[in-house]
Length: 378
Length: 155
Image 1 (cartoon, chains in turn blue, purple):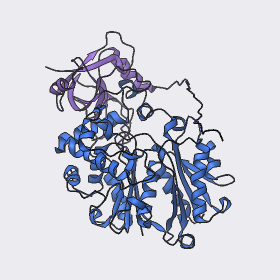
Image 2 (cartoon, one colour):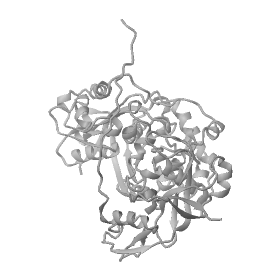
Image 3 (cartoon, rainbow over the protein chains, first blue to last red):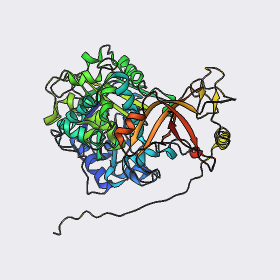
Image 4 (spheres, helix red, strand yellow):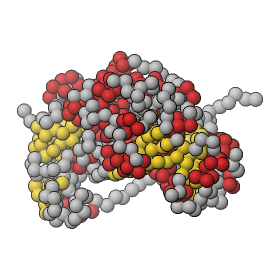
């Protein structure tokens, strides 16, 4: 069977860029092609990850994006969730049609409105938007249930922010760089009680590119290709009131990915995970759903030190989304960071243990309506 | 060379949309004008959905049966919103809550109010998971979700 690999990765800093979106996009794509020793005309096709009106202020923004990605005269496509862009790119290689695909996700969060007004437009104008619902509101509802149903404490949730912002100090591409203590997080403003300000992701700029190649081509392009070994995705109901917010679709997405990758004991077989946690407590809930710890055990899991940088299963050594949140690009950032850990190219935030298998996760929608899980292997 | 400037172009766009409610949601709003909260019942799984849908998203079957649900229910979860955001017309602080109305099988998202919201610690004493709340109607009905003004805790 055909295999697909990530051969190269390039990313921008998450901090506010003074460059135009087109130039900002071009720099990272130029960098990845230079790393691979490829000319633009040699790339098979392009899949972008970007979101238009609300995140770019441009309708059909991919029209504007193509030049900076180098897509001129090529087949191109786009998804708004960049983990989907990634899998669509992989499929173009697995189909046998292309030998190389460039997947690029981009946004300049510094240029558009705050996350809360943007995500309030996820809500329908009939029932949700008029009563003030946005992504943070639903996350806070989910957190309150998480605390009360399982007895996880607010401090245990806050520890995720302490860990991830601490890790981000070792990531030159991170946006929010600030060492915070448990007290800092707990004392930060209760913006959506029980959520505190430092438990909510910032809004970042970011361009990230991964070059995909067929097995044969990957071996000539890279000494250390990273292989796609599993993928799964699942969608939940749109209306948050139709679901149990603590029993979403991540277990289903993870099981699909694990089955494909031959993983039956994720806590032991996965060496590092990059998890999409726009809200601190969600990392704990998602780790439960990924099978890293048992139901309701997320608080004990972080207390145990397992997900720390030097722990048995480091989670978000890059600092995660709490440190850097280039909204539509954040899924592909997780995938790129997971690949860098396998390539041993993560620099100062390279985890201490040997990484053979890495998990990347992405989510969007209210309270994790949609989840994608990607398993990468050496 | 001149010092690097961070030059930007400012913009704000307002564009109109006209979004169809459809038959089911139009009827739901009409029922609200009569101070009735109506759900739709699925012929296959028997769940009662509020807000109603014309079809059951799980069974993927038409739902034709209207069922009136209670104006009282329990708080499944809630959040104390203390963060203003652009284009949000509600004044902070406010409480968003997911409420399971008696006789329904889904969470209905609305506001909890009718109590002093200024002191958060006091609010926490009154608003609780599993606590009962009751719909309070707006005097003037406009045929939208805010015809229910809010839900207030039942003493």
